[in-house]
Length: 136
Image 1 (tube, rainbow, N blue to C red):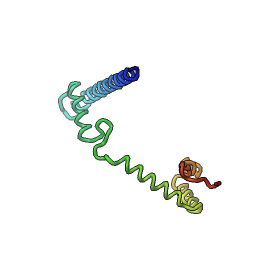
Image 2 (spheres, rainbow, N blue to C red):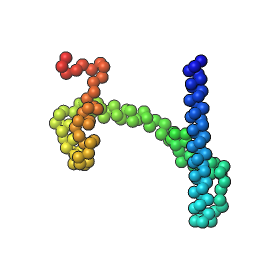
Image 3 (tube, rainbow, N blue to C red):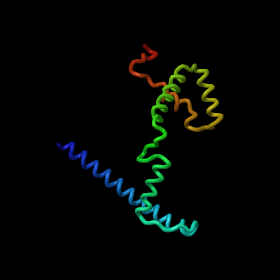
Image 4 (cartoon, rainbow, N blue to C red):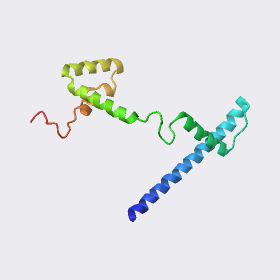
């Protein structure tokens, strides 16, 4: 029962923060519209609710409504597959191919942290649970 109360409290906090953000953002849009658009384009001023409706309409038309872009349904899955493919390619590279890779990165990025060998090798040479280590 205690967990349910914490869940409800957390939900109410998020709901209140969401409403606050919507109200603030709508107010900012209304003020900016009324300050700029009537003088620049000669259009009418808008009220708070029209600003909120304009935000909702633009989110629906241009994507990322409620944090999701409806055109990129498989975006996360693609990134996971691509990341796994790159990891497999890295694991199959010889030391000479890796050195060439880092030399090309240094030419392009300069002395950036992402061009350092230890940055990539520490992330790509992690052992999985079922892989035997080289010492065994």
